[in-house]
Every structure is written in structure tokens, then in C-alpha cells.
Length: 436
Ligand SMILES: [Fe+2]
Image 1 (spheres, rainbow, N blue to C red):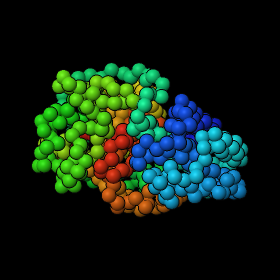
Image 2: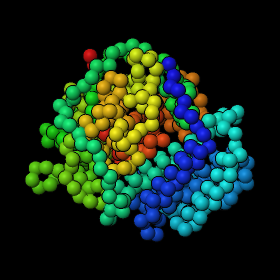
Image 3: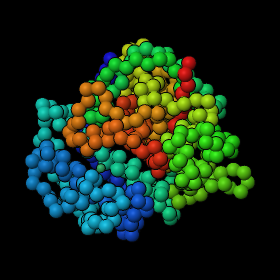
Image 4: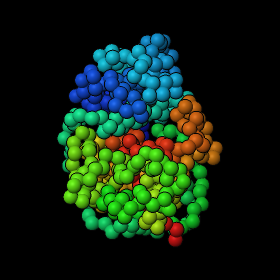
């Protein structure tokens, strides 16, 4: 009932470490000193904080914890402790400037490659199958996605390279859905070597039959909800969602504007363009997702339903690492890793379908679920409580599946993300479900 582990070798770890660092530096390379040090929104850190924090996390875990090396810059630790300093406060801290931050990161990395060479990938739980190296790689990729969200909020001309091409979609009937029969399945994993603590352990769940959309809700479908007066109808919103929409004045997804001819434009990394109506809607909060689902006579899937529809293989009786199987993502299977800075049209990845025929569950947009962020039975904080444990039971909602901005190494069937219900600066969309 469990997923086989992919082989983890020192060469693979070294390649992953190099790839995540190349990605971070390439994202920030076109930005000048002012862009790196200013704060574009109280929701986000100055970009140079993210950069040095990436290096500090790597130093804490790989140099100090694994190798017992003395701190390189002990005086900066508290500046990069995300718990000590909320994002809004970070611009006022005496953080490293861009040149110092880059020097610090490369200094840490030089030691890390030596540590990797002499660390056995067995025995101690922290280093078994390279877990802690994988945790550091995933942490860097998560911050790279945060950097992309910051660049989306930034006002100014585009700094990212031109998009790579994406496969074409196909016409999809709204809420064409599939039946997922009820029964027992597994949620979470006990064997995936780089799964983080909140994904563990694998445990049995029993679900009733449900239906789930074959593809995510598109911008065009969401525009119909807006045009039908969805934002003005309190019956569609939860009390908290209605209070928020009233207080915030939201009337459409983030960055959407009327184009003057009855259609919509959006702003993508500083450039105004027509909204792509056949692509998944993105930059909606969970309240907006809930209201749309009510309007459509449907609901959001629970987290357990989402995971079953994504990964459960009813013939083999086990959870697949990805919807299509256990093999790594490729550009034909999923839109990941900022190959393009946008979601692909719906229907673009038929080869990436799950055992139940559900498409685009991994990549394109994070998908809101109706579930709060709660611990799995028998889970334990590892290796530190501030990654997951301190967030359990709070006012968070789980998002699943990663977005176009998520790196393939930082997502899988069991991966869990969470955010406050009002947030929409993340690359968030949704699909709907229905009772049978
Ligand atoms: Fe972090």
C-alpha cells in the first residue's frame, strides 16, 4: 500500500543542490540593488532576505546539524529566523546586502559539497536517504516560488526571461467530472525518502464515492461567475468570506481589470495581457473558490478526496508518487518549474492523468481544498516543529498539487501546502467536486 522510494545517490543530491541554487540566482540576477532590498508588499520579504535566509537554513541544517561545523556568521542567525521576524518587519532589519548575501551563500555551499562527500546516506534518520539534503533543496525551491510571487506583486517591467512553449489544451465542458468510487485508500507516505513531516505517516482512509472535475476551473468559467453577480450575492459566500469580500472590495481575481470591451485583462509580471479564458483561473483565495463552487452547485474537494483522485491506483491498491505513476515529471506530463510563467490551458496534459482520469492535478495552479491544515494520525514533528507542527489546527486551508512555479522536486501526490483563506498572492486556483 506504499509508494516505492526513488534511488537517492550523492550525485543526484549534488545535482539537485546545484539546480536549486542556479534557479535562485537566475531569478534574482536581473534585479538591481533597489529591487532586491525594497519590500513590494507587507506580505512578502525583501528579496535579498529570501536569498540570505536560503543560505542560513542550509548552513544550520547541513553544516551545523549534520557536520557539526561552527557557525560561519553567528551574528546573522536571528535576522533570518522567520519566526522571530514576521515578513512586514524584515525591511527594517540590518540584513545582508545583495553582494554580502551572495558571498555568504557560496561560502556555505562550498562546505556543503564536502559534507555531502563524507556523509553516509544511511543510519541516522536525518541523513538516511539524504533526507536533510532533500529538505534543504525543497526549502530553496519553495523560496524560489515565493520570489516569483513577490515578482508578480512588484510594479515595474518584466525581469523574467520569455516563456517556454506549453502544450495546447482542448475544449472542455465546464465541470465534466469523473466518479471516484468510495472505499478504503491510503493517504500520506511512510516511505518516500524526501517527504516532509506533515506528509507522514501513510494511513488508511475510508471515503464515500464522489465526483471531481477532470480539469481545474478555468478563468472563463470564473468570469461567468463574476458576470452573474457572484461577488454581490451573500448567499454564495460563507459568513467569513462575505465579510472579507465586503471589507476588501474584491470583485474579481487578483490583477483582473475590465478591458473596456466586456472582457478582462490581467497583469502578469508587470505586463498587461488578455485573461486566458481556457487556462485555470489563478490568484483566487479560498473564499472566492468556495463562492464559485456554491454558484455552480458544487463544493471544493476535501484534502483526502483530492489525494485519492490524484494518486490512488485502485488496481495496484497503492498510492502513486504522481498522478501518472512513480516516474519523474516531464514537460509532457505536467507544467512545473517555471518553464512558462503561466498555467497551461486545460486539457493540455492528457498523458499526466491519474488512474481515475483526472488531469492537471500536479502543476499549473495550487488547488484549494475544503480542509484545514491538521496533523495526520501518528505524525511527529521532524526535524523541527516550526515547519508544520506550529501551524496545525490554525485558520489555514490546505492547497495541493503545486503550480507552474513549483519545482518538480518540491511536489508529489502527498505534498501539502497551506495558507490563510484570504490569501491569493500564491499561484492558487481550484477544481470542484460533488456528492454522488
Ligand atoms: Fe524558509
